[in-house]
Amino acid sequence: MLEIVTPTSLSSLSNSVANTMEHLSLLDNNIPGNSTLITAVELERFVNLCSLALDFCDFTAEMARVLTDSNHVPLQRLSLLVHNVSVMHKSLDNMPNDEHWKALSRKSTNLRVYMMAFDIKSEDMLKILKPSIPLERIHFDSYITCVSGAIVDLISRQYDKFLTHFILMNDVIDTSGFPDISDNRNEDPLVLLAWRCTKLSLLAIHGYTVWAHNLIAIARLRGSDLKVLEVTEESIDFDQGELADQDVDPVHNLIEQVSLGLGQPWHAVMDIESLSVFTEPNRHFYREMQSFSEDI
Image 1 (spheres, one colour):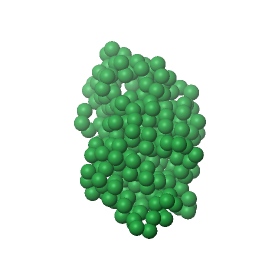
Image 2 (image 1 turned 180 degrees about the vertical axis):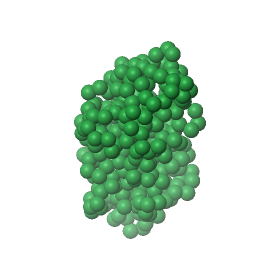
Image 3 (image 1 turned 90 degrees about the horizontal axis):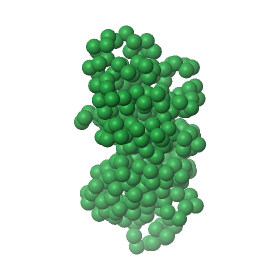
C-alpha cells in the first residue's frame, strides 16, 4: 500500500494477524519530520517475519536486536531504501553497528540485504556500509551526488562473497561530461568489482564514464556468469589509442569483444528509457524488493 500507511497503521492490526505475517513492506518518504512507520516494540509482534522492507533510517539498532530474539524466525530478506530526504529529516545515529549485523547474520545465516541509495553523500555511505552486512544487491541513483571510486572499491572488498547485483545510475541533465570513478587510479574500481565479486550476475551503469577497454575487461572477468550487462551508449568512452587506429572500428570492436567475453550477443543500451532500471526511485525499489523476496 504505497504512501497510504501511517504511523498508526500497524498498531491497529490484531496480534493474530501480526503473528502470522511473513512479509512486511513499509515505505513513505512523504511523512515530514521524525515520524516512523514502525517501532522496535511493534516489530516484536511480527515473530514469523521472513522478509522486511523499510526506510534505512527507520531500521534501528534496537530493531536489529529484536530480530535476533529466539522467538523470531530467522529473517531471510531485508530491503533498505536510503533516501537523502530521510537522512536529512531523520538521523543515522540509531542505525545498527557492525556487532548488530554480526548478531543478525548469526541468527539468520541465509539473510541477504538489498539496498538502494538515492543521492547519498560519500561520507554517509561510509557510515552506512558496515562490513558485516550480507549485502547481495545495491543500487545507487542520483541527480546531485555522484558515487566515488572509493565507495565502489569498499563495496567490492567488503561484500565480495555476497554481491550479485550492482547498479550505478546518475540522472544528470548535462550529458557533456559524466563523472569518471576511475579518475587518477591505476585500477578501475568497476573492473576490481568484477574481479573480486565472483557472484556478480547483473551490472547496470548509466551517467558515469565507462571506458571501452574496462568494459571488455569486465566481460572477460565474469564471462557467462554475468547474465546482465547494461551500459548506456552515451556512458561509454574510448581512449585516444583506440580512436587513432584507422583499421579498427572502435564501436564494432567493443561489441565484438564484450560479446565474446560474455559468451552471448551484447550491445550498449541505446536509450535510457529501455534500460531495465526504472529511474523513479520509490517504485523501482518496491518492484526490486518484490523480486528479491519472492523466492523465499
